[in-house]
Amino acid sequence: MQKAAFSIINYRFDKVSINLSNHKSNDLCLDFDTKGLYDKNNSTFELIFSIKVFNENSIENPFVEVQCNGIFKFDNNTAFGEIPDFFYRNCIAILFPFLRAYISMITIQSNVPGIILPTLNLTSLEDKLKHNTSLK
Image 1 (tube, one colour):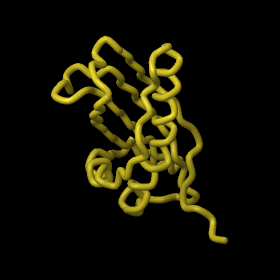
Image 2 (image 1 turned 90 degrees about the horizontal axis):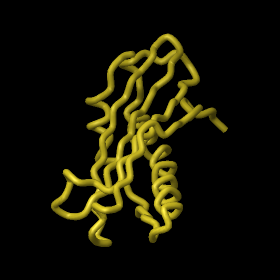
Image 3 (image 1 turned 135 degrees about the vertical axis):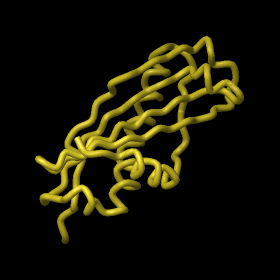
Image 4 (image 1 turned 45 degrees about the vertical axis):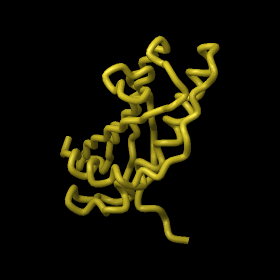
């Protein structure tokens, strides 16, 4: 079996905001933001993955905002321009279940019906992440 080109080595939730008074209906809308920082000295990639959960037509009043930072390590010394395209979509796919579970947990612990985000195909975020990635 061939060894993976990268792996997740850590993640943390840096920013969390819940304002359930803005939660007016069960129809959820989601807004995602992704940024990346590549450190060529130690071949690590920091994915900054943010999600806002809001009701229709109220993106300015989200009731949940969470930012998760995931640290990925490449197995070899990969140059910034040599990061494979599949990495961008896969690092998002690896980190999203942590965000999804965290949002469920914190809303359930708030003694309200939990917000269970659906399983999503987030490949549409790949190009945005690639564009929003810079050297550290």
